[in-house]
Image 1 (tube, rainbow, N blue to C red):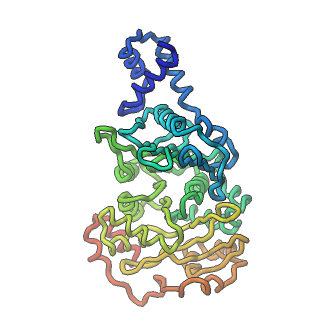
Image 2: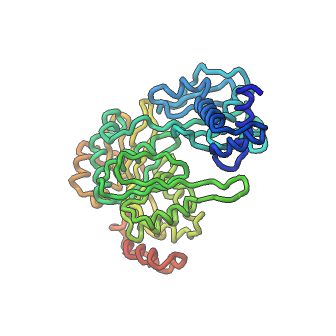
Length: 435
């Protein structure tokens, strides 16, 4: 048996395991293949498996392009990259489906994951941190599809965001105040708008004596901070066992004495536990939510809270009491930018995000109906610095009629009866903040 054939046979054997392979698994595979599993042979096969599993073949040059965040493959003849300005076509082509499929299977096997006709998709993280997803041609047309999300090669500071046109200096000052005053906030935006990157930039500014616990479905946040812990969810194995959900991890994070609880991306029932944490003394929590505009945020949060068993009224009361600020990102012709800062306002009957400040592609600021409430949260001086050149009333004229804020409400319904499905401490905290 040739060395190449032996390595490929071992690769096939360990690829079907329900866990990432280890040198012991390689040794067992060699014995099954009739080989003498000497230390030297096991070490040689392990090194070859790792060496041949790391490269991305024809895609490797694309991964090294400065600024590339995503490489997407739609069959052998369509390869795209994203450098923050939208998808761009490339000249990369595969010889055919067989080569593309082989690359996908090899990348999956390199991290101990199975990918074949019986299990035709995989979602994993490569050793260098790249997020890897593949769907084989048995399900996908025009062929096997790959998605590679490349981690940032360097961490961006808020100064980098300002220098690159991603936000104005005034916006950076406001976000710093949001952090310093321990306000709970969400970073929102569409796919690929830089939500995770901005959240990393913000959290990296926190004082080193604050303990930050990050919970993610797939580890993407990287902080320049001396005291942060990352918890990552885990899917069930091929036997349906071993799953660790985001909900479970949020609950565990609260037992780790966090100064800040961070949910990388709010996707489902875990929102209920995050809201309860924010409403029972864990200040300054944050996360990201997929939304194409601030007007969509509240409906999105209500739907996610419903997955956790909260009624609509209870969800609104919890959200209004727990969250303060929304920072919205969007893509422009020149890249990603912070386009709006909004404030949560409302109660159990009505919940909305009111735009406080908005920025156009030219960097011009406009004030919105939430401007006064934002000033109350972070101090009028900080908002005045950011909005000194804003066209007062300009935004109000271009958005819906400003709705009532808490200060404008002549009366509010009691929320105690709406919170019967919440634990006592969480319900008490909501009532205190809404009273």
